[in-house]
Image 1 (cartoon, rainbow, N blue to C red):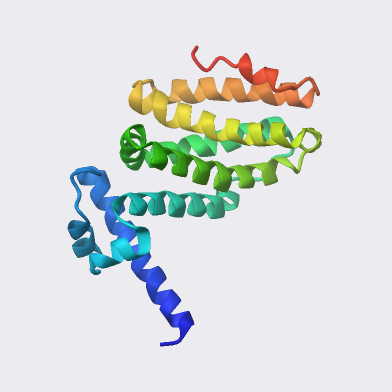
Image 2: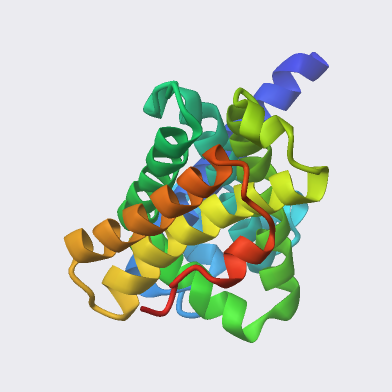
Length: 215
């Protein structure tokens, strides 16, 4: 079989396994789901899970990586190009909140495992911040206010968008049971305050320390 076809077949099997695992992890939980059940659901050999992903933990990392790549690819289609940095930040955070809410069942699985597995936690943190962070930085670089920032501050701003979306799109409404509209309104106020600060050229990393995340 030609190498191109082999790669396509492997990719198809990987996608089948990650799709099956996503479904079972969300319905049964990570610990309760076996690799045999995943293989049966995917219609693949159980050995492929270990061959392609190194086991169940690696499979979960693979799912996170696929979702991060998918989100990065869909990002430009799911958002419009704002004309000022305040509106841009607001819609980027809103998009992140919607993604966190729509993926809330899977995020519950990821968080449970991340709490008990430090290496897994570090892996998904690196994947998400890199995949999404790069896309967000590219979006923000369209504005002079962002281009004028030092590299580390621009990276911090992108991570702020991701963290705010997660906090107010998942932690507040799902874990703390806060009304979604109230959580979204609070996030919008914070982001617009930051956007105005950037637009007035008075922004610095110290601004992050004063943001009312716990209000």
